[in-house]
Image (cartoon, rainbow, N blue to C red; front, top):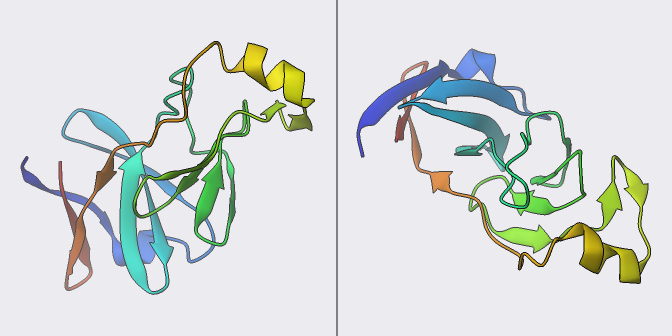
Length: 121
């Protein structure tokens, strides 16, 4: 991993995410409890981007199939439960998940240096 500048702290909203590129990867950067965090911008379900997902209480929800991920740890907190924001019944979620088990997303340590934010990518 290489320490890479990913953004300036003023670029990061306290209530959403900011999409950045670093080390050949698309990341989303956020603030949670006064700490800067970064996770890969790719849902492990079908590889679709997370950046336009809803953010609430430090968790981002995949806008396509409803999987949920902690913005700092990348931990999966909910797996495939909707299609394009519309709830799906329990039997349908098994079909939508395509047999893939709940999976975390890759997270990256973010360190502020003055106004600049760096991640080990």
